[in-house]
Image (cartoon, rainbow, N blue to C red; front, top):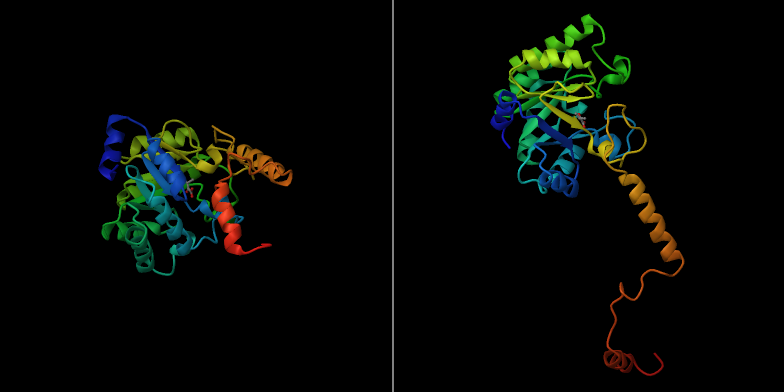
Length: 280
Ligand code: KIV
C-alpha cells in the first residue's frame, strides 16, 4: 500500500481500513486480514505499557514496538505515531524524530496530533521527504489540559476551528488526516472540503476511512471501552479462561499429560542409570 494508492481511494470512493498494532504477531494478523494502514499508535502507552495516559510514551518505546510491527507487515502502509515528547523545543528535533521512525523502525509515514503552530512542523517533515498523517478533533496527548476526553466540535465555533486545522494540515502537505471524536456532520464537511483522505475514529460514517484501537476492537483492553467502538471479539475473556484452566490443570497435576510429554526408550534409560552409577 502506498500513499498514492490511498489517495486514489478517496477519488474512487473505496473506504480505507486502518487499525493499530504494537508487535509482530498482531501486525502480521492485521496485514494478512487485508488492513490498508497499520498504525503503531501512542495508545501503546495505555493498552500495552499500562500508563494512565499516552503522555509519558517515549521515542525509544515507540521505535521498539514499531520495529516489531514492521517485521510482521508485507502489504499495509505502516505509520508511526509521534509521541508527545517528539514535539520538543524545535522543528528540527521533530524532523529528526520523524526520520528515526523511517530509518530505525522501517515506517512508511508518521502521524502528528494537532497542536497550535504544528503546521510548520508538519511542513518541515514533509519537506524532508517523510509522508505525514495529521490528527485533529480530540487529540489524546493534550486532551487532559483541554477539558478532558469528550467529543470536540459540538458547537459551530469550535467545529469551524477544527475545519480550519484540517485545511491547514492539508496545505502543510499531509497525505491524510485522522478526525477523532467530532460530530458526523463536521467530519462530512471536512471530508467534502479536503482532497486528501479523512480517517475517522468516533466521527461517524462519512469519512474516507475508519480507525480504532485493535485492543478495543477485539476486547483485549478492558479497563474501559469508548462508546464508538464495536467489539468483534472477547480476547480478554478467552485469555482469562485459558489461563485459569491451565492453572487448574497444573495445580491439580493434570498438565502435562501423556500427549504433552516426550519420553526415552527403556533401553536408553537403563543405559543412563548405568552411566550414573549404581544407586543413582
Ligand atoms: O494512538 C492511537 O492509537 C491513535 C489512533 C486511535 C488514531 O492515535
